[in-house]
Image (cartoon, rainbow, N blue to C red; front, side):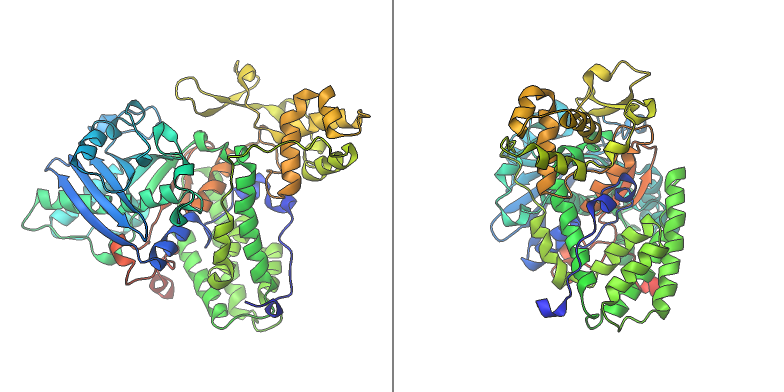
Amino acid sequence: MTRTDTDTIAPRDPNTVMTLARMGSFHQCRLSFMRVLLRRLKADNWRFERREFEVDAKGVGHAVYTAHGPAHSYSLVAFANDLPPEKRSDRVIATEWDATFTLYDGIPDRTEIERLRANIPLQEAGRVDDNSLSVSRANRSVRLWDHVVEALAAGQQPDEARVADVGYLMRTTAVYGSGKLGAADREKTAHRPEFHAPFQVEMLSVFLTRAFVMDLVEHMARVRSPDTAVPLAPALRRRFGIGNSTGLGMAPYLINHPVLLNNWIAAREEALARVRSLRSALPGTAEAVRSFTRRAQINAQGWHSEHPIQQRKLADLRRDMDALATHLAEADLSGPQPWNALWQWGEENLTLEGQEQLVSLLLEPHGDLVDELAQCMAADETTPTRIDGTMPLDLFRAHVEDVYGFALTIDWTAQAAQENVWYTSEEKLEPRLGDRYAEPVEPYELPLCPGRDAARMHADLLASDAGTVARFLMDHPEHRHIARRAQIAARFPFAEIRDNTIGAGLLPIDLLRAKLAFFGAVHFDPRSDRWVRINMFQHAPFPGDLAAGEADDWTFPPAEEAAQ
C-alpha cells in the first residue's frame, strides 16, 4: 500500500474510544491474539503431532500434543480426570477439575511427565517450574458432553441445535501464564518471534486444548460402544470452541497495564484509520464486506444470553447488522473514500455494539494493510516509568486536564461517585469489588480509580505555585502515583480509561469484554455484572488442518451458512 492510495484520516479521539460503554462493546478483529497466532502458525509451517494419548475407559490419564516451530517445540501436557458431578465448579476456590494442563517448553520425557502428573492436577497446590509456560484447568459442559458421547457411541452425530446452543464441550476456569503459580515469566519467551505479540503462550495452550477435548470426547464414545461409535463430522467438529469463565480477577488488568492497553487500542484505531483513509475500495473488498456482514448477521442471531444487559445489547446488534446489510445492498462503494463514508453512516445510524462490530468488518478484507500492526501491540513493562520532575507545572496541568477532563466534571463527594472499592481478597489474593458504604473494605482499597485520583491532584495543582512537577510532588507526595500515570497518558493517548471505574454504575463486565475481545473471544454471556462466559476458537481449524487450509477466515459462521 503506497501513500498515494490514501488520504490520511486520523484515529478516533481517545475520549470517544476509551469509555467503558464502548469498550464493553468491542468485538474480535484481525488483530485479536488468537488470529495473530494462527496466521503465524500457518505462515511458518508449524507441524503438530499427538505424541501420547493414554486415557483409560473412565476418562483418566494423560495426553501430549506437540507443536513444532522453526526454532522451538512446545507441548501441551493434558491430564484427564473422572470428576464427580458434585465437585464440578467454575469458581476459583475449586480444587478438582475434569482436566488440567500445562504448556511445556519443549518435549517432556517420562520423568518430566510423572513430575507434572504429581503437580499440574493440583494447580495452586502443586509446584511448577519455568519449564511450564502456562497452567490451566477446565470442566466439562455436562449437558452437551453427555449428549455428544451418547450420540457418537450410537453411530450418530449430535444434534446441531444443541451444539449451537452451547458451542463448547469444556470450559476453562483459568489459563495462567507470565509467572503465575511458578510458571515461566514472560521475559523467558518474549524474544521468541512466535511469542512477541501479547498472550501468544496462552492462546497456543487453548488452541491445543481444543484438539485434546475433541479427541477425548470421541475416545469416550469409542470406549462406550467400540462397534458402533463414529467420529464427529468435520464440519460439525469445527463448531466446537473452548469455553471460558472469567471474573473480577481479570477486570483490573487494563488499568494496571496502561502502556500495554494503549498499544492494543492504538493498533486497532490505526488499522481503522488506514482503512477509512483508502481513496477507493480495493478489488473484491466491497463484496467481501457485504459477505462478512451477512455472516455477522448469522453470528448475532446465534448469540444468546440470559442476562438482561446483554440481551439489550444483542437486540441492538441484531438491528444494527440488519440495518447495515440493507444499507450495503444499496450503497455505492465505488466513490471516493467509500469506507470512510460507510463509517460515518455507521456513527449516525448504529449503536455502540454495531459501530464496534463495523470496525471488525472493515478490517476483515484488508489484512495486507493492517495485519502488520499486530507487531506493535506488545509493551516492555520491565523498566519502571520515571516521573519527569523537570516538567513545567503549567504544561503538566494541561496534560491532566486533557486526559482526565471527564473526571473534573464529577462530584467526587457524592456517594454514588465512589460507591465501589477494589481490594485484594485474603483467600485467593485476587481483585474483588466491595461497597464502600456497606462493607469495611475502604482501608484495603487498591489505586484503581485514576479519574478520582487525578481530580484530587488537579485541585492541589490549581492551588500550587510550584514551578515544576518535582517541586509540586515535594509538597504533595501523595500524588506521585497519579502524576506518573498522567505523564504516561500524555505520551500514550489510549493508555487511560476515560471513565469512572469505582462509581455506582460500574459494570466490570465492560472491562472483561474489552480484554477478551482482544483475545479473540466471541459470544460473551455475562452471568452477572462481574463475570462472563465466552467461547474461544469456535469455527477455527484444528492443528492438522492448518497446513492445507485457511488460517484466518473462521471467526464468523461459515460463508455457506450466510449464503443459505
